[in-house]
Image (tube, rainbow, N blue to C red):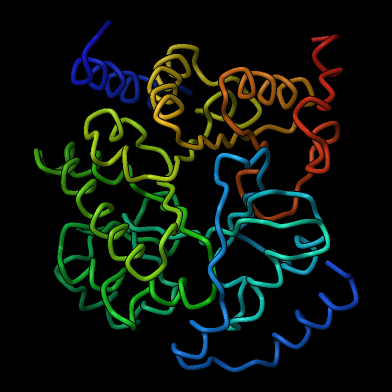
Length: 344
């Protein structure tokens, strides 16, 4: 069996090589409508309004990932066990997320999306003057995603924006009642390894997230932390794997390098070998594939289920509440319908 360091080297080589490839409905409605009128309230009032409940992360059988145009009232009516939303879906109200968690479709765990390896110009922390007079931690704009900038995530000033005080991004998420966070751009460490030859980049990202996690759980015991992608950090750093609630991975079976097409077999196999170690460690593995083809959707759900992962197939825009026929959240995995595979 290959050791962790050798495996991670193989995985990263594959990454580089592949990159060149072409509730009572009436009551809940009232809560959401009222929430739209609720002003931002003081931290102490919010904290007492969100009671702690035990969280069964490994009981999750399905999930929704929607960052654009999310309607919490509509999502509350669905049977998804777990939901990943932007903080903006809460609308600055401490009532929205708790109502979503106890909606008519059943209890839900709700994660807030956070990008920690990039700064986003549409977040509350962003200052317009940074475009012309950037702080030392702010790096180049992302070449693909408009209004997103790479950050030197090891810089204490950036980390202080993300967590560590009542004014931080994380504290606001906790105040609004989210059960945890879904961390994007964890793979930013690779950018700095390649661009600047920063040998400490991987460990610095792991330490950033570990310290972030300790802080969050001092405030909210049991707070969930899910990094997206860069799953190899869990192999490189056992302390990191031990503290994470789970991991999310994109394009495992479909979507890389193009949507609606299979991801390279070597890419998938290398990632599965890492993800299996997350499963063995008792972590929840979430898979997000990007395709609209019925046979590919069915194949994605089948393969994920066989590996012990939890799958969701959607649009890369993450802009709609997509429910895939045959894989509705009201069904248990044993009830999934794989008929589309018969003619493929």
